Length: 427
Image (tube, rainbow, N blue to C red):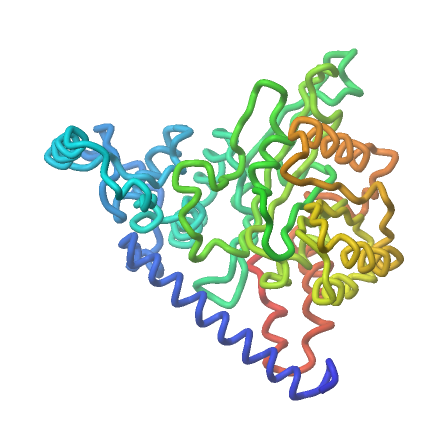
């Protein structure tokens, strides 16, 4: 069967339909857990969140799944950095007494079979965020993202297609966020710049995963964006509260965070503003989102355990891309020769060099690796090496449609059923 045969295209369409159906089913299950079904059509509004009553005045902790959306909304509106936690409070007092009694009886053999109960009864914070945003009207979305920005949380840039066949681009909800910074070029004059976040021209560095990965991509990004001795969790990762709960609907989400210099050359990680995006899930399952990132990124870092024929075939389709590609690879002695062979085949396609390869394993010093990654990002973001026309994060929605959807969809849409993906983003 040839790649462009009708049978092949029909098979791809059926796969897309099945995946879309599964995503909608998972979305409705999450809404049911959180008791948000009625807000799928009748959206949450600002007045629901800002209403003052006896419940909103007390500092309460969630005890049921249905409490989590309101806990998140109240906490984030109050700029509380614990807003993303989906953990429940401790058990009832009589449960605590029972546990004390059990402790007095000695050590139970069940300690060897302990499992985190949160992973069974809670939801992943990213699932909660997607559900709340898709059940909110545009003005509440705008307020949520504004407050999340003040808390220095990574913001959702592209929501996965769940309630409709379309992904949701969140630029409109970010339009009122304004940032002030001092680039190093203005450090001596003590000047500064202040602009809307979505209109600020800056290089965009994207991070994606190909297949499984033995270390946390999001945790590494937090290290890269955090100044020395000032760690901050911009991106949710598995070691945060409820971050280990399996994601049900958030795979395919693209998050974005920023670094803005303060004009202190000895403290700033980068001399100019930098945007960092993070795709949740692997690129093969979310090729549309990955293709979007290849269009809007200055550079794209791919996390991979190894490169096989399957990965080579996928990546070789990017031969027309002008984005710079880098690989963060996990050293595996038994697979290094095969990976090297496929990388050499990819080198002319993606214009790869030795400097585009970053190796990491369990023995790698984390601080040194983070410094190396920061240095690589700095070299990409320098104005002299920055491809301004293809690396900005301030493009207007129509430009996004022209540059992204035409490339992603038109090449694929050879039948009426496939042409529906031309409208695969809200703008």
